[in-house]
Amino acid sequence: MRICCRTTASERNDRAGAPGSPGSAEGGRRVSGTKDGGLTALQAALAAEHAAVYGYGVVGGRITAGRRAEARAAWDAHRAQRDALAREVRDRGGEPVAASAAYALPFPVPDSTAAARLAAELEERVAGVYSDLVRAVAGTQRGSAAAALREAAVRAVRWRGESVTFPGLAERAGETAGTGPAPTARTP
Image: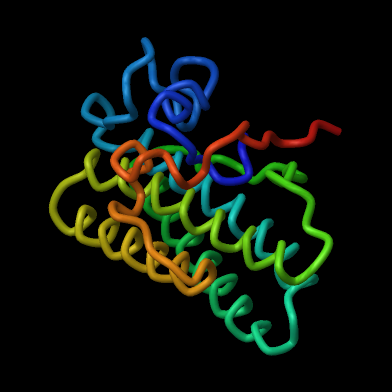
């Protein structure tokens, strides 16, 4: 499990491991959710929200007092989104993917500047997972996924101070955001 499940299209396809596991892209294909009604993409979004909640715990501990309220609001938003996704997975008859005990960060976070950079990275990766969810579901769920994508993109802009051309689609943004090795969960 990654700190937030987004870097590139090929990594999204490789991130899940065994077929049928949360975030799985069976046969190397993009997470589409067409066979399972979007349940796989919902699970990937849930995993990303778990990771974002964890990541914001780190951000909150390192960010300056002037941005602490912003970090708290983002943390609360990700917790609410995580809970909504878990309910949706249950409503579809699935077992929500559990959070990892700990996540490896994509880079050291020794100070407030790095904490703001981590928050932007978290939001960009969450936006990428929601772009997959938008493609995998229809109707009101698509609208909800698009709203979550938009909210993550706006938060990323606030943290980074600049925007990307296509939020959530690093392959269209010239792979400028989220490059480098993806972090992984720590094993006990």
